[in-house]
Length: 450
Image 1 (tube, helix red, strand yellow):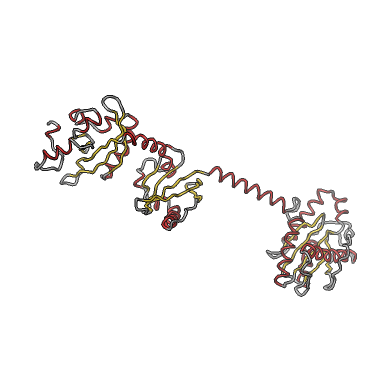
Image 2 (spheres, one colour):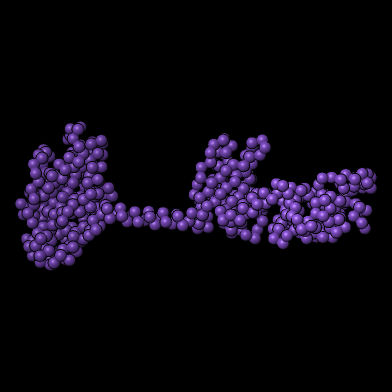
């Protein structure tokens, strides 16, 4: 049957001639295809658009008039539409005319169903948008092929649009984007997008964020998409893979942590070093003066350590320092107590919230634990390694001039502990001596004898 004698599906005989007159002289090309996608009826406008007569078009598919690459691209999209049995609009596509020139059409269509509910085909229109269409197709190509993942998410959490990079990100390269629910596939991200919708509704800027998905780290930047009435209908989201940068930052953080470890700890014993000890002592003195609570320090020194080094060698001396440090740390100290290597064979123990009596008790336990190691030392009166300890306390009832620098108070406290340590050495070593409560002299420290 000739094209002008066939009637579009679903039309009655009434006014059919008038209808054909409208269709054949319209600016848009009207057509129908069957369930296999082959043209069963086309208006005569096709000759103006493609240069083919209706009889040359009937029985062919739309993809027969497209360049191969375009036919593959549009065919995949149209296959998704047919599978969903839904209407569509704004499908931009390139077509090759009979004279070889390219024309860009915008296609829209609706599904046609038989009495049994089965899909019988599609009825639609094509409009020539060559002037604008080439630009649209170029933008679509850029959007689809850019290595950065791009997508649009509607308010229901449906992935309305996505490029190839986005589908690879989601690991759904074979599944139509329109069938994906972000709220289901990426529930953690969806909760953030819901917050972004709220911000967009209020007219506020949406901040960027970093998210982790399938062991990759992404920088995301959502931008609100509005309709003609300025209502927010979706979010256009850019996903930039920053996994390498994140890994590099983590390596840098780990390196900084190691450097900080070196900067704050003694390389031989692993205890806090003198620099960190100064910081901790200043901090604890600040708390003491603010909260009116006592603070004590214990300055411990290994007895006759030079003789120990000369007798057993410096390697044994280093092992001895490490053993003493480990023993001091394991002497049932509290979590906020601080043990540091003050220098050489001296160790400082900072005891927050501790008065003189409590500090002496702790110091005696430290001394006993070192003696219990039973490390042979011929210069010691006991025949074993021992330590002497000086104790000093900053009491809560002591007043300090408001203009006195904290580091001066810290220096004075250690000076009193050093003076008590000197006394312990002079009294025979292997003992604990506490500085008197009223001992506030600022005389130079006495270097303790070995």
